Length: 200
Image (cartoon, rainbow, N blue to C red; front, side, top):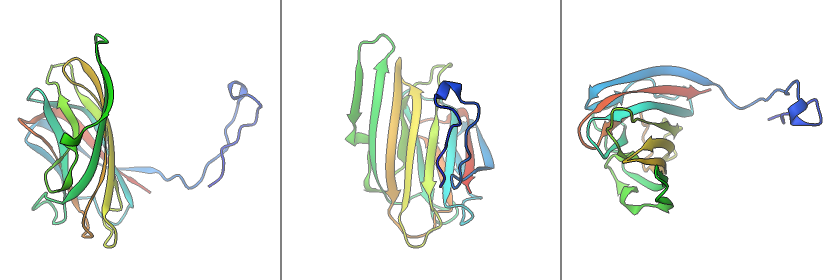
């Protein structure tokens, strides 16, 4: 990979930026749009074409207050979403009135060899003007050798708090993951979109 170089001594004076190679390109594959949906399932397009897939969440709004936006994986094209996972979860938050802040690990929302859905956005408010956004990276889902690593970073509002949720882990199997499903822990996904990209 080449190094980005500037043709001037100071960044503020730069008139051109050198090229980069080997960073990969995002290739749009599909968009899933929620409308009071019990789930959004992506059952096509996840294959050996790409070694990395990125799912971008835009203004996910749930019907129930303090519900979780979560995901699971499938190795049988969506017949079952029950891949066993081990994960980590930590979060940062700040109250609108400045009364509370924290950066903390949370054991309630991590998984230890569990097939339950993994929360990505925890405690999302259902106020009309609130949504959660972020992304999920899934690495080499078609591998028959390695476990299936993923990581997620989201931003949302929950009960007058600004929240960031950080999740990472792996699906502990060597079968190809060929579908993913996004659900609400209670109620429905009222609105929002999920765009899927491959990284070439």
